[in-house]
Image (tube, rainbow, N blue to C red; front, side, top):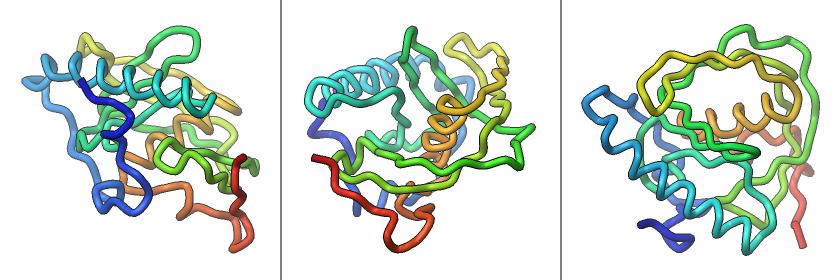
Length: 161
């Protein structure tokens, strides 16, 4: 079982790598990965009082998997976006890999995410506002992009107390 000390932190070169898709043969591993993601997210919540989702590469699992748990757990395997809105909004983003830093970024207001669930069934979900922002943040992790790289300007950083 992975724990908070297994979380990759800002500066770790693995956070900048593009993740590989999950193959159907790897589906039995997804359950273990999700258990690790869940455990670390719960530890982040206990220590820092935030955390709605986490991407597999944040634990060094270089696969295209996102775990979200707001009111119920959802596993996104090999997610893809479409119907991305032109309308954008600015917000202060946070990240488990640098929990004391906030970064002002621009995100798309809405999108549709297509993915496979933990049973390898195709799913899609139209998201807006905070959910769309959250999934864009996690999806970026799958592509080796951190919110620090999306800062709106050089003053878009704030320390969280």
